[in-house]
Length: 341
Ligand code: SF4
Ligand code: SF4
Image (cartoon, rainbow, N blue to C red; front, side):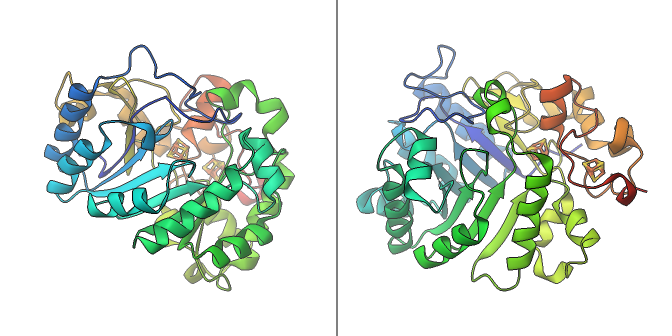
């Protein structure tokens, strides 16, 4: 049983913001159990030695990490593709150039709304919107590929057309619309943040209306998006083929948490082991949880009787957050019942 080729490494829970939807529930201080720089370096070496193809460094705010350049050096030396995820507050021109020189290929910058006041209010920091857009520009100038991450909620980001236009104007290469998941602080705030399913569907429809016309790659981080798009009659050629894989957890990617715990996905807080305590292949080979997540025939509820289950699988993190069962139905599936048969 192979290791997924991509890892989302949540390197720290320390952040310069405290956003209401943060699944890491990040804040001013690192977690007590967070790895020290020497052990983080050992994690980077383990990931590189395991033949991981791509690493998404996320947090928390990655750019606050004092030892970031040492981690990048280890990963870069082994040819690992590196993406740094950031809220943009700490990314200026010099910082972007340093990332590029350290072997980083892409940055993923959070921007939740085309409206400055809405983004700033959601992120709890005046100027966050301006910083995010300045970070996009700085990254472009440094030669980094730029993805913008947006998580629409009741509080921000329902105007998808305006967001697409803004990202195009800013020169972003890629816009990822993330489905809100009720994990971490997002779990505590789900009642006020999570959009009604009808609104989520409207957002998917807005994305489909722009697919093929937008001057950037448009993605939705929802495992059902591809089958939803086909059900709506969208031309599959206009969609990112990678999205056809559905849920990536434990198959196409996994996560390492700030204390080294390996989880099937950054949003699914179920431990498979610790990256420093065992060999990664062994961790994946021995885990019954990995086997059950990978086998989409083992889903229950709607996902268990759905004809799209093999291509979608339903979000395991959302299922777990709501029912404490990682094999349960995805409670936020956008497909109507008649489209499952
Ligand atoms: S029921 Fe589950 S498997 Fe089927 S489309 Fe919805 S989320 Fe995907
Ligand atoms: S569990 Fe959800 S968030 Fe994680 S990979 Fe699957 S669909 Fe994506």
